[in-house]
Image 1 (cartoon, one colour):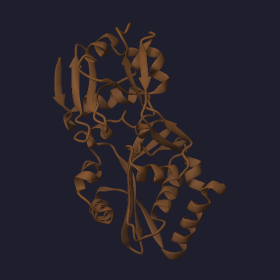
Image 2 (cartoon, one colour):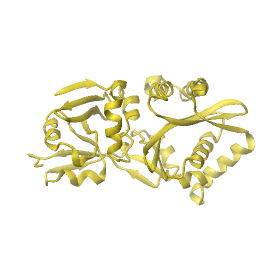
Image 3 (tube, helix red, strand yellow):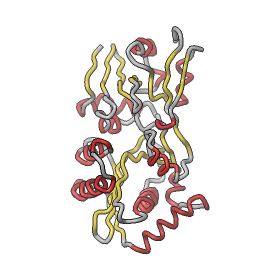
Image 4 (cartoon, one colour):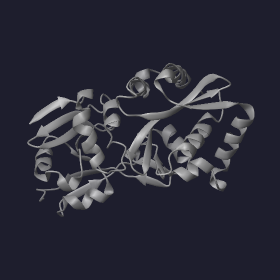
Length: 289
């Protein structure tokens, strides 16, 4: 068995495999794994013709992750790996039946679950439950003259200015936020096949969104950073970006809240259409595959 630290060199090995999994979960993206490689201590495991990713959850458990469609994974190798890891993770709900056996023990932690919204709800803020978002958007547009542009190499310096200002607004150490993963995302924008938009208010860099296609119907927001001094910035960015996405995308994934109350409150306030649970699969007794 070969085990090595996840690096940019693994992009060719993993990118296609992760796409072939056809999962809606945010982890099934090479850029997500790479950008959070240090936070989760991601490693590549090669055993025979099988490839897995090992890592550590936010609550400290060691896990192993399939890197493709579960129906073609070698489950006997996965079974063997569980001697060294706590569980298989993240497993979409629709994959649970592939493991079989009454010894299956699936569970999930709410903080791991991805928040998923319809593109329409963010592009329109229609209905009474979005009344506060619509008001903030209207207040923003009445106060400011925003400009929106594709996030390109020429504007990365402005995006870095926004990121630094965001970190100053948040306060604390950069290691306690996603500052460094986001900085890497800006620096490796083309290499990681990312996509985004940048926003200016009265000519000043004010916010950006950085993400990618997770599958043919879903776009994932890896990062959204806005200047706190522009009230309504996030409501405007989400609304505008959802409105310009190609029609094939029906949903947007805002990723998980990591068990952080502030993130949970913020993401819940947009009324997710669905919470995608990420199952932790282990076995009681001797699992029979």
